[in-house]
Length: 252
Length: 282
Image (cartoon, rainbow over all chains, first blue to last red; front, side, top):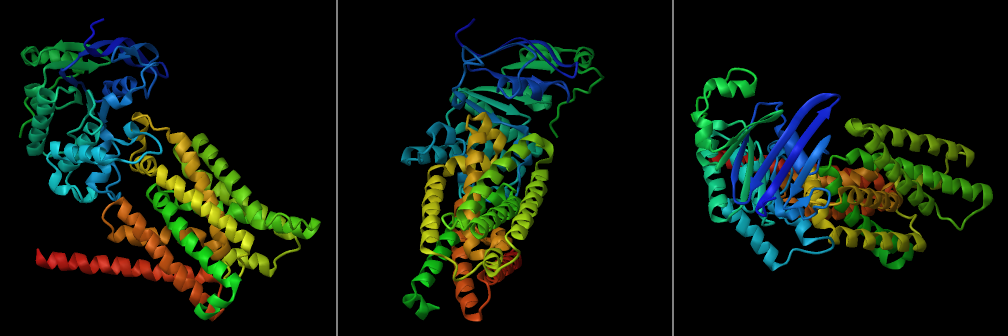
């Protein structure tokens, strides 16, 4: 096994009630990569994410995180996670941007301890890194979808993770902000050295920024450079999507 | 009451007990409201009633005065809270079903113990609607201890409780022991309810946990501010409610809740006025 592999998946199978959701998935996420995981709805993207994060147990197969089998892995602060659900949280929850971002440090700081000056500084830096410092003391519910998503990225960043997993982070974000959002991810990847796994169905914008593209529909159908992905014919892509698709860029 | 307060020990105890629950009820209430557990407070208060009725029954039947009803109330409340948690994990997608089960169970047991203890008496009335004169020295010390315990736990586990309340899934992924913390939290709730019943009564205890929070939620910026504002509103309601209840000879549960509702209406009105003002500027 390569020392610099952050996630390794070996022969992952997952089925519910005899229905195969994932079939023999093999995948490696090298350190420093920015991998876009593409696939149709119901193709098992979110299931795979949950398996990686230990929220679901695969029917068979092995997950290795930071060179440790998932069962032994416990350094969860190395992993930041921005879920699809972040977008559908209770909008009226009375918390400021600062408070929301601080929850990303809770586990790292540990029980019965308070945030010290250094932690508070980190929270402000994370808010600054996503360009939300104007809104530090605003209630999260007052922000737009795109701004909220930035706050959730800040929450994931504040514990200084080495890997950031994002599940459909651009759902509900308008196209202009999607662009800015990808630039932010690109910056985190290039300048802060954070490994990224981005789960999305938004092929258009993502392929411009990702270093690798993987396509998942029950099993991995393609894993390679974005340039190679773009060379795939419509026919090949519809084969893995299971139905014809229109690969027009999603930029508006 | 103010003049009497200096004169009579038992009144001073009542007033101080009121101030203590004015802190802990809205403090826990803040988390209860944002976690959408408001009705759980109601269910637990009825279980506490069953415990108190059980205590009164023992007292009457076997002359067991060694166990003050607050202790049997506490015991029932804590056991009830653990039951709620169990039920909530059994009915994962219908978690609210735990509430009517526990609530009706509490009322059912209360009815049985009340009947066995030869029906209603004034002491029971005091527990139902609250009382401005029922706090004994021993009860005060119990409630004081509960207050210290609750405030310490909330202070030291504040960031975990807040993280869990804001986003349960995310906090699980980040490795917080959500199950244990949630259980601890629900036990704290049970303690606070049993402590509050002395002053506000079984039927209105959930009001003191939720109304001040509902009011501060309208105005506050952020969670911490909301929490402190809710405590301020809670204290205000308890003070005005206790004093006016004493002079008008009304159980304080009623006056405290009415004051809380007035505060809530003012908060909603204040917000409306501010929103229209801002709207006019824009």
